[in-house]
Length: 459
Image (cartoon, rainbow, N blue to C red):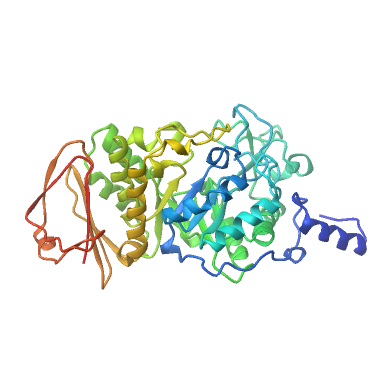
């Protein structure tokens, strides 16, 4: 792309670019950006992450980035060390999306939406989060843009087109509010990497959750992630909202546990046995030969909170929702929490409208359980780094996570009835302690678990 400007004008332009809230989206050399802020010196190792998803429109009465900053202490006290913000960019014209439009319909890749605040607000949030030892990831939509994105008119060749030359929506979907990008176009790929780099440089963010990742070519992610990791003198965390094992090869730290969530849901909706979680775990890690790699697991997120229901609806009420979260947090996984679930919030949380969570309706007992579960996870190398082995029955999800020096044993009754569980002899012989209070807790041949009761032991 040719820029018909003289050298002096170019220098003025690039200086303005760094200081502006909304920057030109043309692909530029990384040399035009200067790193804002200092590298985050408490960046969690990938196995240590506990991720908290923020729906900005719902998180606070203001629905702004500042509203997130105001509740950072609550997030920190939960035991979280990674926040990922749903898209902060302006969304485009509404085409059947409804409400305020979808945050995943991106109008400008290098701008903070005025709905949420400003670049300076984001910088302050990141800086304050870093002070609390929390990393900040941005949600990134690389597959498609809004129909009024500047690229549509300036570079229609950057989009997939039908036989008549019309730009199309993502194939096989009804996503009428977005236009499908064409990853065979080299210039578009450069522009996308440039836009991702912009946020690392100008807002000091710590990585990305990449939306619809399986539908973007792996070779793009390989190129983009390699480039991004050269920017700051620290590790970035990269989460693929996808299931392909080769996302790890592309450089992602995590993939997404769609199958595991589906299996958990069927235990409650279709009376499937708890052993189906063992099967789901095996299926998600099929052909994944590195024990260090982890899948992000959840009991809700922004999509399923609308389409499927809240954890309270899906998993047998408050006690059942905690029993399932425990499994999602401990079974060879990286746990992800969607704002509100930690207080047992029963209402579905939309993201096409500004519908604030009523934090006064929280359940203190549920919050205490979440904090307890997360705190032990944060202290346990066996859960974070260990090897998984399953012992489940039809009613009870049972498994161990084990390293050479540490072992954790989990039982979680996923039914609304009291059940008896026959403990394998190999587990009885171990000197267990209660994971949460440290008291000696020897196991007998048979244990009884109340409805949705869970037990966690360590050795």
